[in-house]
Length: 268
Image (cartoon, rainbow, N blue to C red; front, top):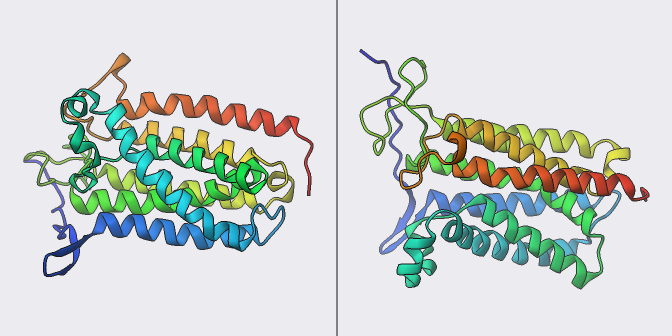
């Protein structure tokens, strides 16, 4: 007989006012953006002063659009392209769920590039500050995944903390959302914060952003080892999951950014 911890069934709807329902997932996005916004302001108040307060305030709108539009379009393109080609109107129905971090990352990267160019800011300095805050949103997002009982882990009959998820059948599974919250969120935000405290690293602009890309790629690849693959995709090339395959370019991009940061002359 398999042992499993009871899944804490939490209502996905956090607040309800008549026909208006606010879900934990929406609150996770709001919490990530708001806390990230204040954290970036805190970082930018110190050398190398990547942005002024007004710049950070304005960038919040750009970041929000990058996360939402990029995350949605990334899910459409990476996970269900044929379905949405057949049902194009549903692309805009974000309330039905379906967001992809890798798409959101591309959206935020594009936002950083365009915003930095428009405001004549140092692209890599802005990227460093923003990347330090991204794991905050990742943490809350994974906690929301757990509350929703979605993106659960693989069957784990011998793991003492395994859980039976309502949508995952009767088998106990890894609570992989919590693993990913710890790796992609807590661990990564601590590593980047410690790096930021070292002036030599902070002033070599781009090093922290590159480390974030590599660090997230590592965390995602590890997390996917415990997460159940998407039912409509399953295992892909070499037994890898879509999340793992999409993380491979992050390693290359992160290494390239760190290499470029090393070639630039550090400026205080």
